[in-house]
Length: 299
Image (cartoon, rainbow, N blue to C red):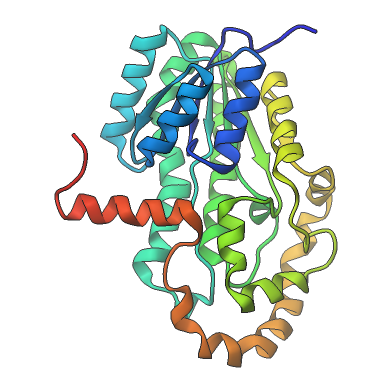
């Protein structure tokens, strides 16, 4: 069986764990050369060493850092064929109870970090007539209460990627959007540590109330990268959501009010538990920002 990715240089942001790390392994098995970017240098270096790739520590919201990484990747490999904007963080809980800086940070990383990634690497993709894959979410297809920052950011990156496709397609660059539902990652497990949020998610209608295994979801994404697909669905049923997405805001708005009214006393009593970002990736982002503010950032 041929390997359509053999020899191609693939950049993956947020590659230290979860979707990014497993996607790196699957693309490496198909012959790709890897450039891994993220905030956790030890974890990134471990994944890169395992796969014979290279890693770069960078905050995707730092435009200058991402421009430097892009230059260094091109210098190291001579080209870039695929860029996967995967880096993302999340927070949960009612908007009015959220910390403004945490809410804003989700928008910064998920949306503006993707913009900075595209700005840094698109010139190389134009040169190679390459492929840019933006990782979005079910959250881009349907709104959800207590996920305002995440839904806004993922709807934003979906629209951003669709706009890019129209802009750069004539230059030979293909642009795709990847959609995942709740998938077994550190982010989802971190969110599930909140009893109220976990119970509310369990009350969602099937099939949105399940947590899906990571491996088959990432295998579908890898297949989409190999095909340079415009739309990549990590769970089979997500494709069908496109046909009904126009009806979902009204439905969620009606059902969500009922669920929020029921959960409000418990949410109010446990508000202090959901002030920060969720999961190990969120913790890494908060640590990196603390180090930067204290002057301990790496050169």
